[in-house]
Image (cartoon, rainbow, N blue to C red):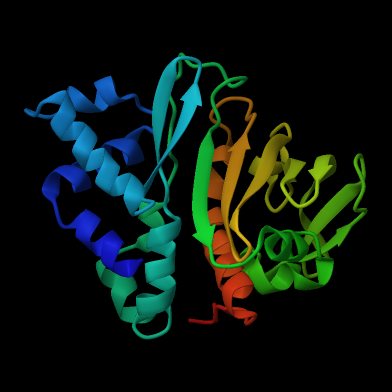
Length: 261
């Protein structure tokens, strides 16, 4: 997987495509094509390479195919090559977090049909294994951002709370549960006054089996009330959480980050 990502990043046109999606996510092929002196087919070929490396994900909205920057593979490279060995030095050269900053959609698109943040990853574990991790409060600190713990009433309409120490960082209700394929939550951030002032948004986990021991996980975080503090903040946490979830599902061992440094 690392080889595919490095190969995809080796071409300047593909890096420029990622830069465009970092500036504003959810672009059509026509929008991206207008920035390059290439044919439509040429831009499509570069996008296919990025899709194959899972650096770009696509989602149909009406008749249009929209392209989204997927930062999970970059986070995985960070975990493998930077977090373990050279984090204090690499951060002075490259702020990985900046790669995963706010991905803005067209302001003219309605929030009802336009997901704000879309992440996808392939996991060498069964859909049931991934579902069991996500829905097990005891496993939450093994994959969640900042090693958060959780308390959940696992039923439709039930409340959940993701905790930092004895304080609720994120809370909400379960909107939909379809084991082992779909989990929909309301998302109310509470870790700071600016995000606590926002209306609740929505998080959807979609787990699609590929084989008995592999699945595709897509996370969509949407239904923000505009460009909120929450919509800007969560892009720093989801790539790390999903990368850690993948490691836990595939190896059975948590990737614990030491934040002391």
